[in-house]
Length: 398
Image (cartoon, rainbow, N blue to C red; front, side, top):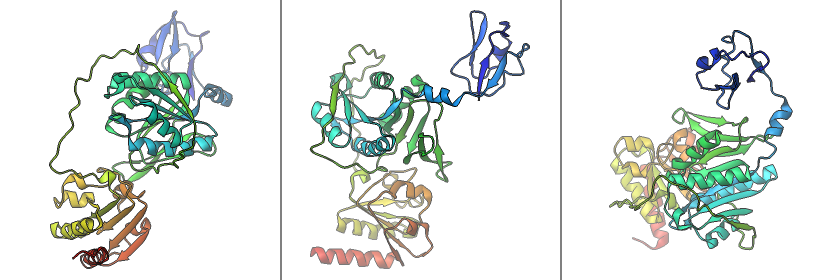
C-alpha cells in the first residue's frame, strides 16, 4: 500500500504535516505532498479534515516500470596496499552466481589499485571493472570512497550491490545506502535469488544468532548487502577470461577530511585464523587450559592454528583473538577440527563453509555432527593425542 494526497481535495491547511512521525509530508505551492520518507503508517489519514489523504494499491506494472532500468550485480572490490583483498574474490564468486541466475552481468568497482589488479578481477569472474587508480584512493577515506561508488551506482543502476563486511565496508557502505535512500542488510552469511520475484534474499543471523533471518528489499533499488568475510566460496579462476576495464576519473570529488597517516596495529601475538588452512578448535568440552594444550600440540603437528568457541573464551581458557563464530571470526580453512564443541548456531555461522570438518565429541547427538564431514564419537582427551602421535609418526617426528 502507498499513501497519496488528492490534490483536488487538499486545501493546504497543513494539519497533516505535524502529524507525520517521519517528516514525509511537505507543502508545495500550497498543497500537501507525500515524499520518499513515507512509511505508509497511515497516521495522517484520520487527521485530514477534507479526507484528501488516501491509501492506494500501486499497480503491479508500476513496480516493474520503476525497476526496469535496474539490472546487473555490482561488487565493491576492496584493496589493501594496492592489492585486491581476499574478501573481494569471495564476493565475485557470490556475485557471479547471482548474475548468472538473473541473466545479467557482473560489475566490479576498484579504487586505488592498478590495471593488473583489475585484470585479476576479470579472471575471477567480473564482466566489467570500473577502475580508478588515482592516488587519492590509495588510503581509505569515507568521503571519497562513498562519493565515487555512489556516482557509479547512479550511472550504471545495478539491481544488487555487494561489499565486504570489513572495517572498510562497514564504515562507508551505510553512507552510500543512505544517500541512495535504499535498504542495506549487514553481515550476510548467505545470498539467494527468490525464484518468483527475482528479489535478493539476504540471509543473516539475528537475535544474537538464535535465528537466521531472510531479509528482502522489494520496494527500493539497488538491493544492498555487506557479506561476512570467509563465508562465501571463491569462483573459478580463468586465466584466459576477458572482460572490459573502464578507467574512471573522480577528480572533482570533494572531501571534508584528509587521511594523513595510516598506522598498523602491532601485536606481540598474531593469530591469523582468516588465512589458516588448518584450524584445530576447542569448546567447553576441552575442560580448560589442559585441553587446549593438547589441541595446540595437534595444531603444531599439522602446521595449523588454534581456534575456540565462545564458551571456551568466556571461561578464560584462551584469548578472544582465537574465537570463531558469530561474535568472533569467520573462517574457511581446508580442514577444521571441532573438538569438544557442541555446534551451537552461533559457532556454525563462523566455520560451516570449511572444506572439511572433523568433529570429535562424546555426545553422539551433538549438532556439530550435522555439518561434519567426518565425525568421531569419543573423548577428545583420548582421541586428539592419538591423532597427534599418528601425524608425527607419518611426518617422521618424535
